[in-house]
Image (cartoon, rainbow, N blue to C red):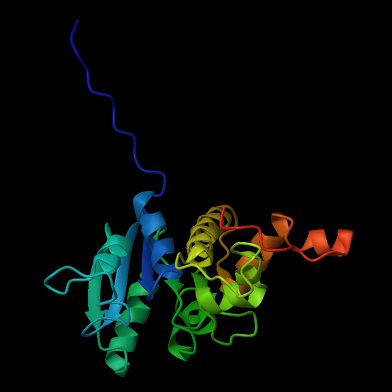
Amino acid sequence: MEDTLPTQRPAPLAGLRIIEISSFVAAPLCGLTLAQLGAEVIRVDPIGGAADYHRWPVTADGESIYWTGLNRGKRSLACDMRSPEGQRLIQRLITAPGPGGGILVTNAGGRSWLGHDRLAELRPDVITLEVLGRHDGSAGVDYTVNAGLGFPCITGPLEHSGAVNHVLPAWDVICGIYAALAVATAVRRRDATGAGERIVLPLEDVALATAGTLGYLTEPQINGTDRPATGNA
């Protein structure tokens, strides 16, 4: 009996081309997830690298282990984003023809040339996903959002009177997975209807929705009691 190798099936998102303009955790993790599912993800950075290019932890040679982990499996392009020529180049890359193209993932807000309406002028069925800090567009990162929700006050031993934070950017990670799901859903809708999509995903909304799903918001509303610190588990 001859041994036969299993037939390699095509990856679920093979054929998609996604342009990612991002930094830190949530948006890069979105791109990473889509790349691992077979999409071609092209990360575009300013010349010299984005703000997370040298982020800790690093190797003895100063290479960011963090950056490498979040960007494996992607293609890379460095471009002068401040120049009109660089901006037009990125716009053409995002809106290039083809059924699998026309997709942008970013957390680089406040750039009109990257806005959904501007890109839709060049490709009406474009899909854009923008990760924000807060719903109103103001800044927010995992650690400030976590503190705002009050989780440090219910973490740690009962006898400890102060707030206890943690270093794992859990909301960023959850947001990145939600973002990847949102992109995949928008692609399915576009395949069915031909319509593009503008997706805005605030990190704070992700945290509030998750806390609500797990009962952290409902418990005090129903029982009228505050949740005490219950340890770290």
